[in-house]
Length: 552
Image (cartoon, rainbow, N blue to C red; front, side, top):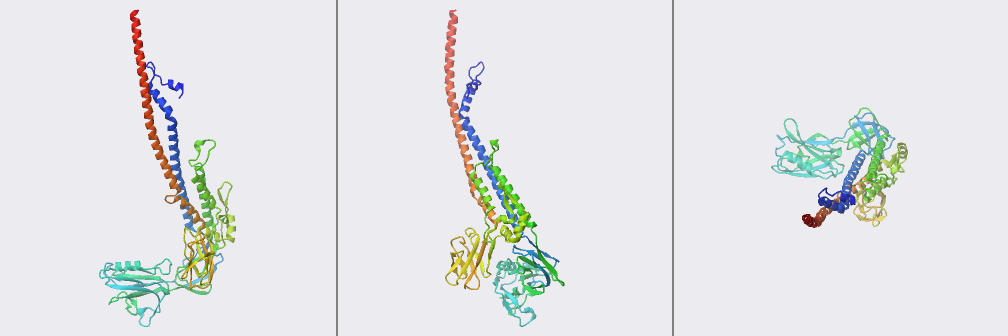
């Protein structure tokens, strides 16, 4: 503190204002510490706030990526001259652009449907019995009388037990709970429901569509009211027979168990809607507008996120007050570096790959931002259409239909194309790594394909092929973001450390207040003693003055 500042605390006509002087001296002694703590607290709070914004930005980026991924445009579209009869939809990048066929729908596939018996209420009891359902093909409706045979399709049967107190509702729920999806197509083998015909309630059973998915129902009760079998009698009523769809494509007659046909044209799904007396035209074409919009959306989102991250760590050479709160922060640098590297990362595990984002017309500018060239994307797409799939969709495929991926380790199995070979006896490799055989399954526990298990159909003879395990570009970016968004991530740890710093600031501020109080008291004692001494001098002076005045 300067001399002028001390003098400014002098009283007028009453000597030194020791209270103000002590405060000035204490402030001079502790001001640097106060300022340091205030600055530390302010910067720490700014960092906590900015880390919160950073995490929010990354979460927004992830949500946008998931939205882009869900739209999965592949660059192809299917067309139908009559969408009420059938639709053709691209379902993958393997779709071709050369479909131009004539389609006639003769029969739609239907689900075997049985009902009965009639009950007064859903809460009516059904009686003690065991009901078993098998799936396969009936040569004819057992209710037609005599000679009908049933051939199982090999799907798992289901069996439920009813007691004397089991209601119709309970029976329905028991069947649905016991139902399985034997063919792993996403639909259970049977669906039970209760219908009301205006007078009574009945159990309704529906199988999957197709002639090979009809039901044989046996009932253990002496009165087998829920049977549909030549042995127990066909007490249930067949409402709809299980029928395959029948259609003609370019004069070739075909049949499927379903009305959704995904194995007719590679990469397309044909959905049959109704029968037609005349042919409709189905075709395909290339349409990259949807892909272009999604890629533009990715590039714009990426650039905005990177601008935000750059601002958080910016250095304003003119006015340091405008520096980013995370200037020089290693975590921010790491995140920016990880996201930049993704733009040049190889997308492995796809046939004909690896692929790169640049194949879709996305390039990196000198300032690190991305640019998108639609024309370049269209040119690249014509030669490498699989790139689009590699951008949107994970890949689990093989080059040999007898080989399937039975399992993989999402964490340890690295994306890639792995050659598989077995001599059927003792030598098996996946991606050059020795594999262990167990029945028809082959697995590896080391190397890049670690955790990958291959299943070989129809025995274990000499078999070879290529296994493709790929993570899409979108999925890889999401994985990177999850490293920072997951619970107790490095961002969470940084914020926790900063909160610990705030606690330390509070502790140091309390200690400083104690020190200020101690210094104030010490100065007060010293100036109090000084005031006493001065008062004593003044009293002596007054006495001497009085004595001199008397002599005069």
